[in-house]
Length: 137
Image (spheres, rainbow, N blue to C red):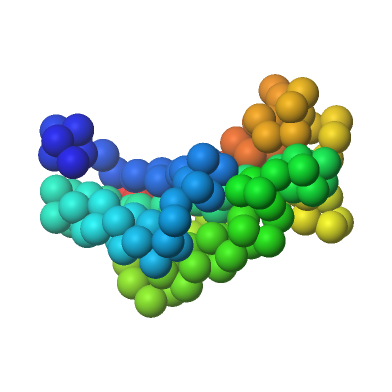
C-alpha cells in the first residue's frame, strides 16, 4: 500500500501468479484484492485499472499438484472476473486465453517447467495486452 501511495500512473496492471492458488480461502483472496484496488482508486481516481487472469499451468503440473490445478485456476479466474464485473470500475484482461491450449492448459512447448512461460509465450501475453487495452487521451 505504501508503494501504491507513492505512484501516479494512468494505468495499473494487477496480476498475480499461481502462487496465489495457495490461499486457504478464495473469499479472503478476493476481499484482499478488492481492498488493494480500492487503495489504487483512492490514490489515483482517474487511473484505468486492469486485472489480469491467472495464467494456466500444463496438464502434467495440474495432474501432479494439489494446489496448481486447472480447476483451481479456473475458479480463481471466475471470481476475479466476477469481482471486476461487480465493481464496474476495473477491466478484466483474460491474458490466460493468449497462452492456453484448447483444453485450457499451458502447452508443453510454452514452458520449461509447466508453470513459467518461455519468451515466445511471454510475447503472446504482451501482444494480448496491447490488443486489449487502451490509452486515455
